[in-house]
Amino acid sequence: MKRLFSTVLFFISAVSALQAQQDAQFSQYMFNSLVINPAYAGYKESLNASLLHRDQWGGIDGAPKTQSLVVDGAFSTDKKVGLGLVIVNDKNGLLNQSSAYINYAYRLRTGSDEGRLAFGIAAGIAQYRLNEDKAIVEDPTDPNFNGGSQNYFTPDAKFGVYYSDEKFYAGLSATNLISKLINYRQVGNNTIARQSRHYFLTAGYLADINDFLMFKPSFLIREDTKGPTNLDINSFVLLKEKVWIGASYRTSVNLWKKNDLNSGTFKQNSLVGAVEIFLNQNVRAGYAYDYSLSPLGSYTNGTHEISLGFVLNSDANKKNAALLTPRYF
Image (spheres, rainbow, N blue to C red):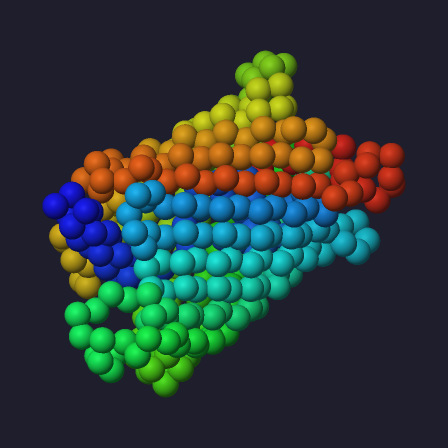
């Protein structure tokens, strides 16, 4: 019975995700915002690479699993051009979505020495694979499940703006910009959902408490104009510039009236604990644990997310290497 109920809860949540957020979700986005904003490319002014694996709702068969690879750096005179590559693989039940984006950002100096205003754009392609051979059906002759897999490809684009200085950052971005121009009935044969345009608004501030401790509050708003607005409130501290420790509260809010919103939509409120450790000058490791505050929390082992990051050219003795000023955002 517990297995049956957990399965029912999973499908309720999956339907909720279709109604609202469709883009892959991450809990450690604050350590590398390129996954949500192309204007972040080149922010750290060094060549960086990061890997991430997310295992959502552990213990439920078919629950989402996500992997990402992110590489970015700043180039040209005065590091004005940011370039990046983002590859994401997201598996949710029978559907597997893989995407790859090339990111370009142009970065302008503002008032302070550390101030930068960046405009970014990303272009890429997404592959949707429906794994019919993994479906459990009562009628093996059901024509809707022929035992194989179906693959569909669609183009995509993103746009973003990102400002940062030594104490403050703010970003605004949009994804799935050309989804409305795609005929999903023809491209996806009515087997994949139209991708809704998503908007992300984020900001944060760094406060020096003392020589040992820094405090960084931030927030992220995710909006697709049809489902509930998702809000993350984050609070992190940096210890001796070696260890980030913090927590996030994720919830759904109704910022304005939406005629198509189902008032009974399954809410996925959760608490997130995260830590990131700088193992040395060039390597960092991160871990996040999400605990669901909804009824789903009683039937899962939580969500686990691990990450590894590498700085590939941080030799301070090289003239064109990363700036000596740490990049806290």
